[in-house]
Length: 152
Image 1 (cartoon, rainbow, N blue to C red):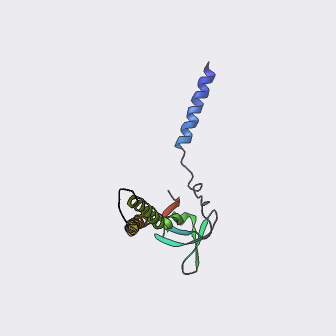
Image 2 (cartoon, rainbow, N blue to C red):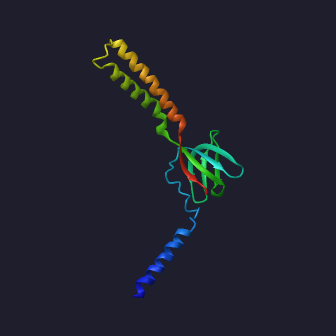
Image 3 (cartoon, helix red, strand yellow):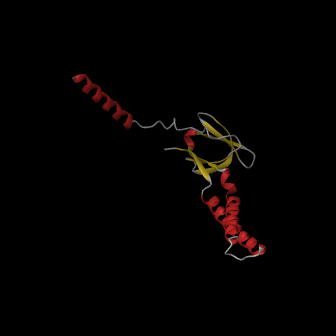
């Protein structure tokens, strides 16, 4: 009778210890999504600055990036505050927006109720492409970086 109760108490104590345990910040150093050649921004603690460049290599203790000047810089893991990478998919947002806008207004202008000539339909499609490209450009400007690592 007391054995299941003892097992339950021990299980709850172990669960409490696991919940109170602090995560090991060294274990969070996972830069596996990075491939050489990807554009990065590394923010450091001391001195507080942003280093922009192209990813070259990583290990357990540091990250190495190539700066635009052609030199490479190795930043120690303890000095890295944040690593963000540029998302390449956002570069295509204006093109996708232009295509969506042209298609939407082009289809609306082609409806049987709308009595537009070919030129009128083309003008509607061009206006839609312009509006869509502006929206795509705003999307690209709004969120372009993917968070790879952030120190606690």
